[in-house]
Image (cartoon, rainbow, N blue to C red; front, top):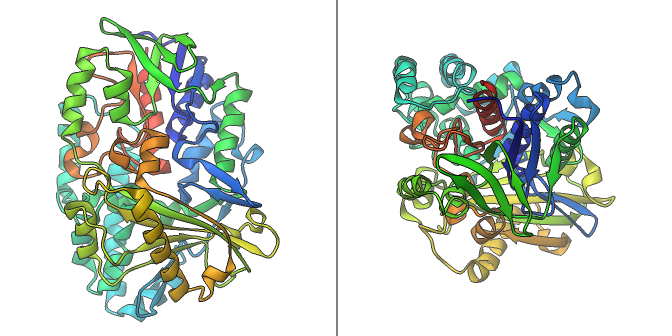
Length: 493
């Protein structure tokens, strides 16, 4: 394959933007085509009544993978984005009132562990050694490399076996620590990339090491400002961004992708196409004219997809310095709740919440004397729980706000200035997300690396994929890593 002179990237999410920056930096004339009115994909945002609401993601880790995108052309990320460290990374809270502040401050973290169970301090040290090992094997060595054939998986097998990759994150954590709350504290991270801690491969314990070494960060102005910075950098080096014009077809001729057609009628001819769009939407809809793509679509339909999310955004009167930037409000059940979401397709009476409170770091995201929040609950995707979210949504919204009120802000309903929710049907409508899944393919071992959607299509050699559905998976470092792997394939000629 010769290095393409022109490339079109479908979708302006983090993966698409990162790939486009890499291609443009290497001299490939690159155009991103985005269906929505703003770039960002899942990192969309809204401005309402003076409040700024990030759609998500809101946890930024491994800033080095982002800094690299600017360094390719001798620039500095600080020219466009202000990243601020967040500490504690998260405050974990249980229904009995127990709090656990999770950070990379060794002394403080050991004290937090000792409060739950002194005997687990040494167990945590052993878990940290394990996390460091899987971080090296799974992220540093394999996180930015494409798996295009089974032989590449075989080469990785000894390392995967050494770290018992077939076991779950929760199982591995339980090997090292005995306290149930601490087991939850050290295993919940997989939920941030769509994985069930009870079934997601133990390799994903690397997230703990990733956060510990690189910290947890926030982009001043919100995650949307990081997206805006990436767009500014991409355009500065000559890239083109087309907004508000959905790709309706990827044209193919034989075993080649030749261009894209958009809803407006615009047609772009190109040497290579890279999809940052939902993988099922790409294969089922955009590549409907390709027989090989339809065979892939049939296989993808049988895969397991991550759950969806129900997110309540709300702006309220008052400031809350006692509520940290990130909180996890655990419910009364852990394993049972996860089984309801992932296996049974049940919307349980109880739930666990991720609470995002960005104005404690950046008050400018709300009018003076006010605060911006969102509360996020994992819920089954629409394939497992096919309900009318217009009916269910308002009920769940009230229950979530009631719970935040009960545990943190007693008069929350009287304080609300503006609020709105985002449901699985919105993921499906706005992002063409298959069954409303918030994270694409579920990150289990049999859907990882070679078993995930390949960064380059097997039958159409100038068709590429980037983002949560391909290797290595969801989360900002994951999709930015996928861009590095895909760019290497596109530029190797």
